[in-house]
Image 1 (cartoon, rainbow, N blue to C red):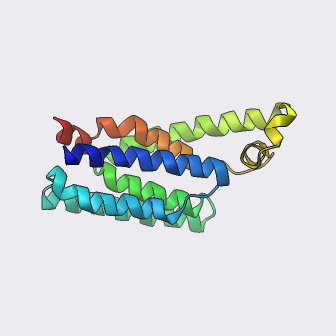
Image 2: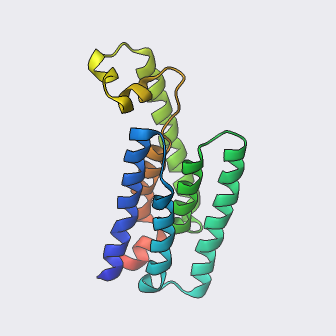
Length: 167
């Protein structure tokens, strides 16, 4: 029962990250840290073996190294880098591959949608709120936390970690 409740917190934190990214184009460090801490607490409750636990840590660390490099090159934001690494920690191997693909597809769709929306005349009410004006700003950033959240919400219920806990 407790492990099931803990598993619900992962998607909840991903949704909070997406909303925060939409609203402010930032993702607070506390969200990624909460995901990390929650994973550390959840692992024994879920019944991960030391080998499985180590593999999840290795995946998360590899994801962090990769995304920090992408951040250093200016390809993604720092919050996106940390959020992806935290989500990768939860996905583990090989689920992180599918999660990455789904998130990338969601990010592509989000980008196409924003490019279209930014070229389309919108009613003035869309520019009265800071968050929507920021989203519609020509040449503006893409809140990639939304894509990472979509990937997590889609793939996590299919992940080995989730399925081994609920079955």
